[in-house]
Image (cartoon, rainbow over all chains, first blue to last red; front, side, top):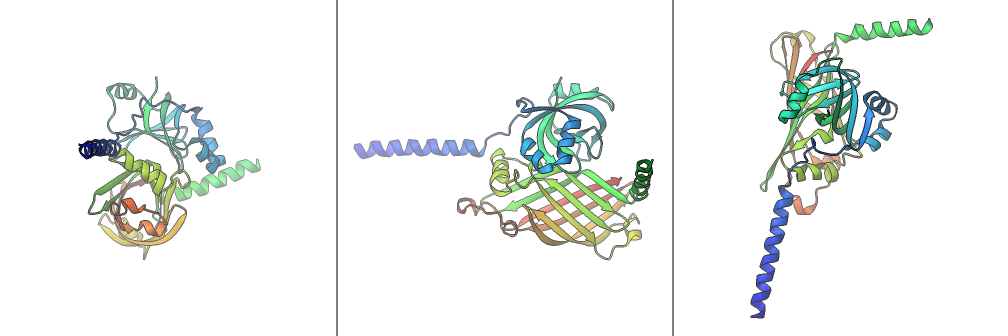
Length: 141
Length: 181
């Protein structure tokens, strides 16, 4: 009788463990549109920080949710169908990459944007190439 | 006055070179790991690349954090445990087309070449030679290659528990559409 109970408890624990593991394995990606902002900064200062000391800037900004404001220099659609908006400079500025699947609200906010507009964009900082790269971006009203 | 002169000279030399350079900010790199346990794919569509059509030099730079996986957990492990992307945020390749022939590149016909260079991942540099197909289409130059990278070459430690889930040889695919600088 006692051994039977132990077996049942063990089996339950095992099943729970399996469920936890399965949940972890299938954990969804973060929703970056609703993610809270870690750092608010102007795009020119963000670029300067990376230009003057990339390592220091990496420590400060990498993986953080950044809210930048700045002037749109270029709007581009890649051949993969992904939208990107360059602030400050097309080559050496801040490049904000958007996902191909966006919410209706985002699409609405994006469709009126044009070169020269001032805009606030939120995104995760992935690092610095010739430009500062933000990914998983969304426009902030 | 002197500064204006220097600036003008710099600008002229820059412009002089400009039309020889092609670039992209949205190059595509994916890698594929096949193992009996599972297949894993990751994609980065935000790769920066330059091609100098005068010299045949090619450079690539990709941010590790920009690789996306189907499973969030894999992406986390990739960044935190294997690639340590906080310490090594980018991977680069600097190379040159062997026996470069500018006319063949610009012919509009597929131009099959070998590119030789150095691949830098996690601060470790390895020689890499790979077959590349380039083709000029209108204003653009398209390029494509596939090569094998070994995690062990870059000192990537795979825990014993998951060593059967991750291939010893990772297939890397690169596709770019360069535009004039």
